[in-house]
Length: 426
Image (tube, rainbow, N blue to C red; front, side):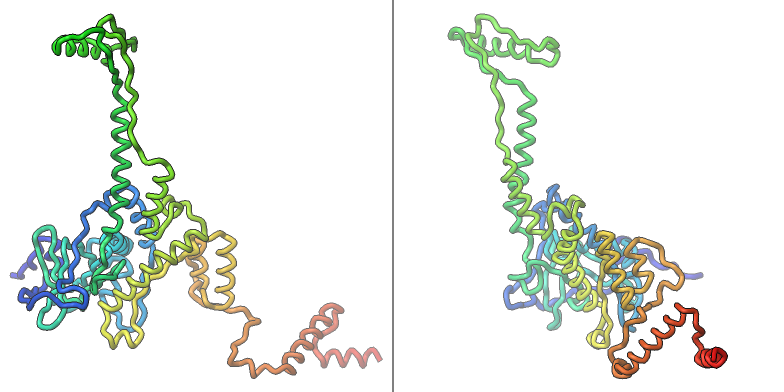
């Protein structure tokens, strides 16, 4: 009877099903920190509406990056990058998750997935531990990942992809996004002030001056009787009072909220921190604005992600022989039709792009033969320029001129035939 393969009981087991290291020699010592570590930030950066919108906008654009694998050292892992790096995420979801984690925590960790033999590399998974600490294991750097489920795992540094932002104080990890705390607190205070203003504005309050001194019981009863007139059931909307009160005045509620200029400064502070702007977040960016955002934000992310995946996938020898992972994007999707046409024509005529790549720019389907590269006839290889002398060029030009003249007067092009006609004419 065939033995059934044991089922993994959780996603944790699926990702870390190999034999784990448990014995460590102590914290890994670096230049700047005796105990290098980072903790997932819980300050609410992803819970604020503005900062989440900024991160989500950038993640959406980053998710359109396309993996490009070059070299001969192909594997199951690099093949998985095309559509599904792990069983739970497609490639756009994978890239989007990494971008989001990097923006929120200034550090993103990518773990390699292995087959049951714990040797065959088959994919990638971005993990989000609550804490990551560097340890020395037999003289080598290992990372201990602690998860909110109270589970922990040790992983070799060489097998982990680590992406960072704002890396200064730590030799291994990003410095964190706590610098954004003042901006988050101002945004929270603004939200609270608006909510309180709405709540206070929903109530009508009065202050009344009693006509004479009364005891506490009489004052409370007078106030209660007057308040009954403020009940929503009072359809007439008129409140009256008698001689018990000398005067009654309505209290106008006033709550402090940040004015438009101050709010604009708060928003710009968040935009500066994440390297974006309002037009990109609201999907109003034109060609120039988006290109600036791509080069300053998305492209830097794409370059780092490519290097990180390359380093954790290939050996030094494989990298030296041209094996590489990189990510590209078709920025021309945001260009005007005039720009698309100009760029496509220039690159297609010079044989840099094929027909299908031009079709991609205009969101058109690929066609048969579109993978071929062509080049305009008047271009010449620089290495062959010596074979085309000035005399040859002049002779070719004269021949072309004679042919054109013959076509105009209707004379035959063949020299022998031309000679016979001349004799007959004589």
